[in-house]
Amino acid sequence: MPRRQKQKAFNYREYPAKHYMSAPGICRWCNKEILDHLGELNKKKNWCNKACVTQYLLRADPKMMRQHVFFRDKGQCEDCGHVWRYMSDPWEADHRLPLVMAFGDLSYWEPDNVRILCKDPCHKVKTKEDNALFKVAAKRYRCEEADGG
Image (tube, rainbow, N blue to C red; front, side, top):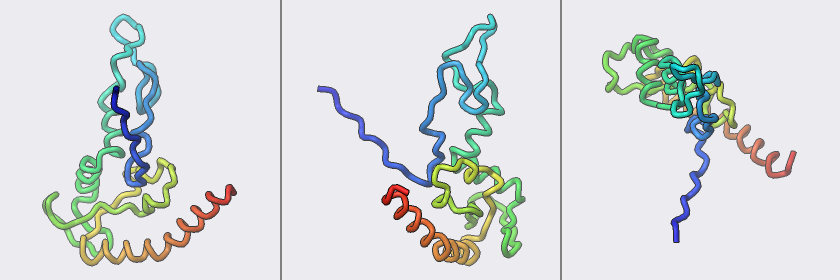
């Protein structure tokens, strides 16, 4: 008897579009048709070019997002201004608008929503503020969802 595959539980930290596959021969990022050298639909490919792969991975792969943000911001903490020299230094990639509030909105995964913060104290302070601010909203949303409204 074949084994059943466990359905993966929803995780608000994971890019939601990871779970949606486009039709064969359609780019997963820009939704354009992918044509082969004869002008026919190439059903073996998921991406039309490297730019689409890069844009998708910036949102779906945390390691690539961290690297992008580090080089974009030149390793500088947005709060205190401390400059980190290496990717392995103790800094955090912080979402300005927390992912817990995304509720499926893909704009929360945009690179513009991510910044560099020092692990301690900048990110700890911001996390405390977010918890205080957004816990109430998240609870209210779950209650409304349970009520059907």
